[in-house]
Image (cartoon, rainbow over all chains, first blue to last red; front, top):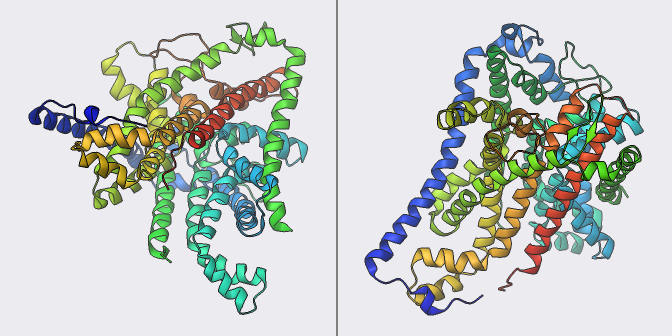
Length: 293
Length: 283
């Protein structure tokens, strides 16, 4: 890349040069302002419409044909069930894959392929993961359109995120820690499990919380997998059918009556409160336990 | 042993996605000729006299993604330049979590925002004859969704440009803007272009915003004020109905999903290639 000095300095006089500086700064501030105002407008709109509709009954009632009597109880419980399955699958597997790739894998062609593969998986649209869940968990393994199939589908979706976060957390632990453990007679696994992993845990947990909060907000993969959109019962075990809060919100949003828009906004407020709390927790965890070696 | 299995699951996932899409798509093309799929501009697979021309869905997808990119690229790059070159550390510490929050908003919420606020409050007064479901509002909000991604990946690339390059330009008397636009941006161009391509892939694969606000009318229109249907919105629409396993409607969603997969996968590969091939290594 070459830029000649003449090009760099080709501005005629000081006044117009300073004017260009100011104009450019204004453009940047304008871009920032648009992004900030859009986010604030979103939050304001949702709160304005949703808050008046929000009450205790909203989180304990079942959905109904009458907007004013509709509640999100089964959707909230469905979300908790699905996220439970998703976390139980994706956290150990993601951590296992991260440990394998960072600590055991030799730089072979296969392992390089696994690495590229994980990067590509993270770029596949979530709606396609839903079709994968439909074909593999619902049909092939015969789980049906249940909590189990939904949780595993979301688990596969967030697996690359968790694996990448796990790898970065492990890589941030200096090798001298592990070498010291090995030097005093620890086995490879003892050094990893008692020294490296505890040191990597805060970074890993930050990634896990962000991944789980992403799974909690996902709608499309569960729709294509075949989750219900209108349920009047609560799932009791992993082989029950279910809906989740984002699908319930989508269902309310797509009704023509204005009153259902308020119900949707109330659902969004509940969802955002949970997600923003989780995000804040992740940021706090990162700042609190971030260690510089 | 468990660890190797865990790493293998990621490969199995890729294989399973490939086999699933391929299997059902082959089944689809046994019943519908590729000529009917790629050679027609009429998409009505659920009609009694069905037509399977996929172009209206591709058209809708590209229209929305195009609007999104046109909106997100200047916004994302200006934010990235500001964060990397101009913002003081304190301002950065406030703005970064802000972008992370924007990135963490579920797409179903963004869809509600597009339909309920952007169309009704922002666009209606400007374009009185805009349809309730339209490509413009969906595209703008899809753009808003990918701004944090483009901004943060581009900022990483710009911060990786060594300070000596900036100092060299300052030494020649260049202004701050000149350094940002003529030194840092070109030096980081591989990371920036790769961020934009990844953003485009995200926009093409985005589902809920377009399913809620973009409409369900598969037409060959370029008018952003009209309703369209994207590939993803079609998949959602059919999935919501009670689709019989093995029926032609069931296979249609896989054929469309394969088209979508090929497009996003190609973009992802291109993005990674650009990031690697054109990276100027400074260390």
